[in-house]
Amino acid sequence: MKHRTRIFSLLTLFVLSLFIFVPAASAYDGRSGDRVVIGKDEVINDDLFVGATEVIVDGTINGDLVTGAQIVTINGKVTGNVIAAGSSVTVNGEVGYDLVAMAAAVTIGPDARINHNVYASGASVESQSGSQIGGSLFIGAGQGLVSGEITNDLLVGGGRLRLESTVGRNAKIAVDSSDSSYSPRYNQYGPNTPPMPSVPAGLTFGSAAHVAGNFEYISSQTVPAANSVSTRVTHTLPAQDEQLSKELAQRNKTSTYLFDALRRMISLLLVGLLIAWLAPRWITSPAEKLLSRPLPSLGIGLVGLVAAPLTWFMALGVVILIAVVFGLLSLGNLTGLTLLAGFPALGLVFIAILFVLTYLCQAIVAFLGGRWILSRIRPEWNSKIYAPLLIGLFILSLLFAVPFFGSLLEFVIILVGLGAIVLQILPGRPVNQLPAEIPAAVQA
Image (tube, rainbow, N blue to C red; front, side):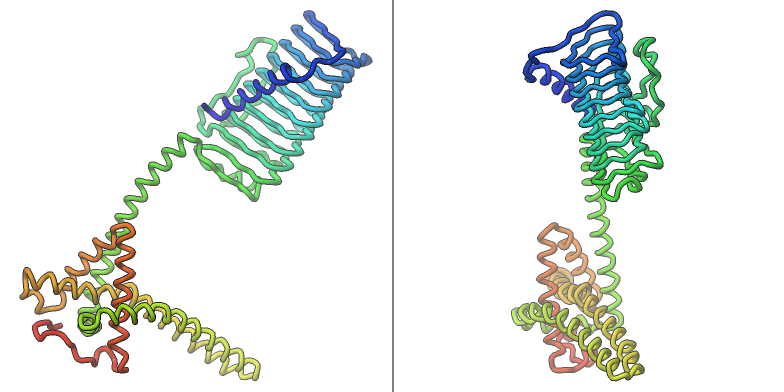
């Protein structure tokens, strides 16, 4: 069921409940006829029930007004509720409590003062500039034009809506955003139906439109102008569009996931080849250390993964502290020198940590895995570093793409690879000067 259809049904049930559950008044005035007019000087101190072709209220009703007529016009004052149904309902007077109006055209005129809520449904609902609603405005209609002031909330379900006034609290609006949405014409509902305003398709705003609280709108399209009406805007798709959006998002997520996996595979292969070409011992030497000491590599890698970022942040703090001390001693040159030297050095260290964790650890484990596979099918290919490295990286990229398992595998590989690197550099010798503890058959 469409949103505006639900609102219309709720309004209808509300009106019926008033008839059923409100206790009958001990006294009331009932009138009927072709044309019923309550004159300006007339005062009715009872509830008034009217059934006629045309009803005009220019006087005062100290009670409720319940009327069904082709044309209903209220220019006077009703101290209680007004429940009106017909081809057109026009209120340009004062209503002491709620207004419930159901008509082809519902108009709240410029002099209207509704002290509480307005529940309006029909082909067209309009609150004109100058009108004041002391409570909330509920609209279920083909179109709506809101130009009067609303003290509390605005709730709308319709084909199109234009807001040109201030909403004191929150607004929730559901509209059809298509250009072909329903636009009523007054001549569809008989010759006595008043002209209906022309409302643009979708959700539009006037220059004075403002929502003080939350502004939520339901539409199949985003309305950028809504952000200028309220600082708290929420856009929700209709149920059917939301389902379609979820399906499209799932498809896009799958394609994006595959694209990311392919992009990562290419980057691993390219960076791995670059390391093998420029510094092959960065791969081969830690690989042999990992092969000989796998469990220590895992434990030391876990410690290193925690210690590396902590050490980096401590070094950052030391650089800042030294700069502050020099500044307090009025040694401005040393302060600048400390910052100019410390920050770039820390930046280089940070890049090095990312490089090791993202590429070098994977290359070390991939080389071992590829060499193990080739030793069983093509042992002669192990004479160079490139073949086992590429095969290992390709297989690892495929495994990394497996949800959850890939992330867990990558974490373990980072731990053992980092531990092997730490074990290799513990004696304090540069990696490119370490002897390659690998079989003579594997050469750069």
